[in-house]
Length: 398
Image (cartoon, rainbow, N blue to C red; front, side, top):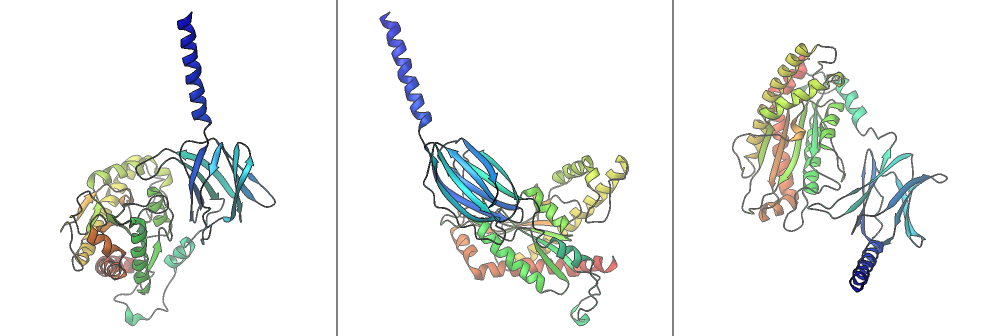
């Protein structure tokens, strides 16, 4: 009997301990916001998973986030951004067990919330997405109009050859928002330096009378890898470049690299497009496979991908040639890889690793406007080199 009492006492102590742990308030340590053409994202850094509820209220329009059994220790982020759907954020203790965050919004949104487990960069997070019901078109409409326009009023003496429309180049700055990319020893974030370089490249492209740049992301927000290539197609892009800054454990490694799609990835992408051919009626190459039988569609996709791979290699070689003029390169030949952003079957695409952010000197370079301008000049010169040799002639004959 005495032994049973001891066991019961231990169980009661353990149950009391477990209850105390589970009832301990969660700390909301930080709060961040990101804004894109699709809407706004709020991220709460918490020290443990939380119970929460998200709902909307009207007059005025607002989204409410109730977080149970929590303490708010964070600073409220500024919602200022050209893409923000948020007007104002206020917080307060709603009742003894609930902390409330009220998000006043300036347009209709669909709220979606979920939790993310810790990873190598962040701890536990509660994510609240405020998705626009009608995403901003950004430059999509303008790009399509530009693509169709007859530019007969342009000064002919500045052009190497006649043309019917501008060459549209999609410029993709890697990472963004919650994804900082690689981090330098001194805290430099890949997402910041590649966006700065991408903007400089786009500016140079737009100064050319025969070219137009479209930015896949214009600010500090994340765009899904699959969506980057879809946006390029929506914009009617003829070429696609993705800009990154590499990182490895060995800090002495330095130099730039240029990548094109691997043969293995190309084969898998053909299979994917064929599997979803009912959605493939708007290929930028102008060939629809939606109404073809499987054998014919397979031949079309195979030919299209072979041509795109060939053009991507030529495109990558022209960019690598220019990159070699401004600094060291890690590889003197084109690398082949399975990067998701290189998968378009109809848009020649390259990925550029501008430098190693893990190398102290190259991290310093990447933060320098002088170095950023040199890299942007090289990338632009490679684009122009390829366009003069190949792309402009194609446009002139279409």
